[in-house]
Length: 356
Ligand code: SAM
Ligand code: SF4
Ligand code: SF4
Figure 1 (cartoon, protein in one colour):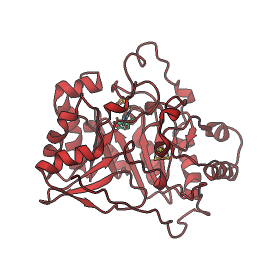
Figure 2: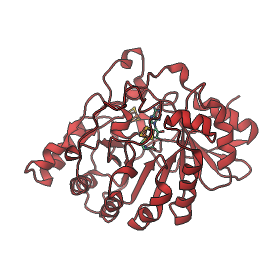
Figure 3: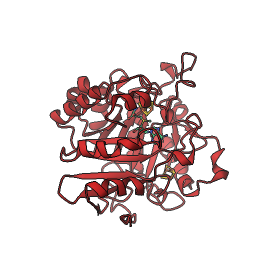
Figure 4: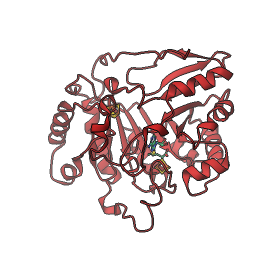
């Protein structure tokens, strides 16, 4: 029999912190706590589940730099988001480390009152050279994506033949400069890297890094997602548990996306992000800001809200705050809970645009 997944409810955060007015709540009573900011739609990888080469080839038109929010615009928006209840900011992309001057943005965000945590999700390709500067700028932690330890499989998944060793160097360097604890994300696609699950678990056991397996999701329309390519989290847990016995761990905070387990022998933890087989919409406190300044209230949203127009117009912060409050107040998203053949064909934004 498989291990039972722990359940956690979502109590409200106690009181508004620095710079906050009243916390925003959506139609389901969910507060707004985390903001994921995509700083670029470009990437140096072409992961088959995210930016397949056939679509993101030579002819693909990425956003021109004038259309990206600049750092001052991002910081201004984050300051307003803090007033609504946001206290965690994650930079993502595309590949966030290819945005020139990203360390400066980290520094600006880390210095904001009310922002407790600035983190970043990266493919790790540039992490070895940038980790020290990011840490010095105030980055708290880093999440690194790595789907296999075998060059053959990883190269096929990133589709630019990027070697595993350079991502591992990035992880080592990040740990050495103190960007700990590191989370390592592995998307599992049946028939592609499901045979790599145990190797990954074995490698990261005892390192202090937390390996998290992500169920392959139907984000966007470019990856040709099929349900039978999803490896259910419960299957992954059972496979690891059979070799390295596991036990469930209570969630650290409401809205935590990963379901956590610890090795019974004390060799650390793993996490499962089971957005397909065990949706967590009820606890979802995340909003996503695209690189060009559109706000999405769900990873699977069909449309975004143009905040760049507000920021580049002559709107006061109070007007922007009111608009954000209205957007969040009207939110009723729970795509993963409703996922069905009826939702499959709805227009959805791509992962590389919205940032995961
Ligand atoms: N480029 C960075 C990276 O790969 O870490 C940040 C952006 S990427 C879109 C953020 C996360 O989304 C990565 O961990 C990636 O593996 C995950 N991801 C992308 N497409 C996915 C999909 N179809 N299903 C599940 N996870 C996906
Ligand atoms: Fe790039 Fe990350 Fe998407 Fe891979 S998952 S193509 S590294 S944005
Ligand atoms: Fe949140 Fe949408 Fe994902 Fe549900 S499907 S957890 S509402 S982002």
